[in-house]
Image (cartoon, rainbow, N blue to C red; front, side):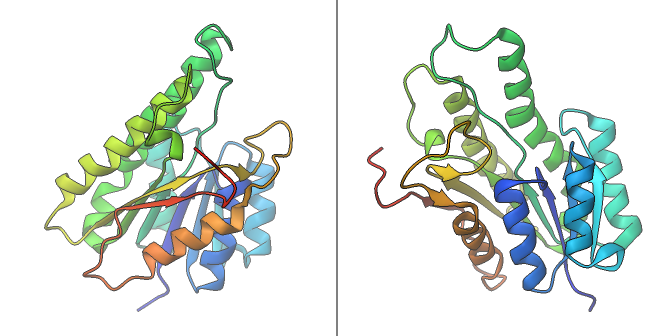
Length: 228
C-alpha cells in the first residue's frame, strides 16, 4: 500500500509545521494547508516536493476552499488517511478587549473552520478508516477569565467528542490535542518555560501511531512549570 496521507490545516508555522516535519519523517505524504502559500510552498519543497508534499492555499472559514483542499489531496495522492484540523488563533483576555471584527474572525476560524474541515474530509476518512485530530487547548478544559478564545476551545473539545460519537463503528479514530503554553507565533512575545511546537507534534504522532483498535481521544500536554 502506498504511504499514508496526512492533511494538516494551519500548516505554515508552529504546531502545524512541526507536525508536518515529524509526519514526513514517519513516512507520510503530506497535504499542507494554510492561508500563507509562500511559507507552505517552502515547507512542501523541504519535505520532498510534489511526490511527497503539496501546498494548498486554504482559508478554513471558506467552504469552497475546504472542498478544494480535499479534492487536491485526492488528485495528488488518491487517498486521505489522517486529517489534522489545527488552524486557529487567539485573542487578548477581557470581554472589552480586541475588536468585534477580531472576535468574529477567531470564532469563525477556531470553531466554524474546524467543523468545515471535518465536513469536507469525512467521506475520505470513512473510506480509509482514518484518523481525525483537532487542536484544542488546556483553555478548552477550564474556563479562563474573560477569554472568548477559551470558549472557542471548549467548543473544539465538544466537537471532538461529537465527531467521535458520530463516527463510532466506522473505524475512524478521533483525537483532541490540548496544549498548554507553547512557544509558537500564537504569542506576540516569546513565553518563558513553554513547550516547543515539536513537543505537541510528538503527541500527535503518538496518537496516530497506535494500533487500529486503540483510539486516544484526548491528550493534554502542559509545560512542567504551568500551574493552570
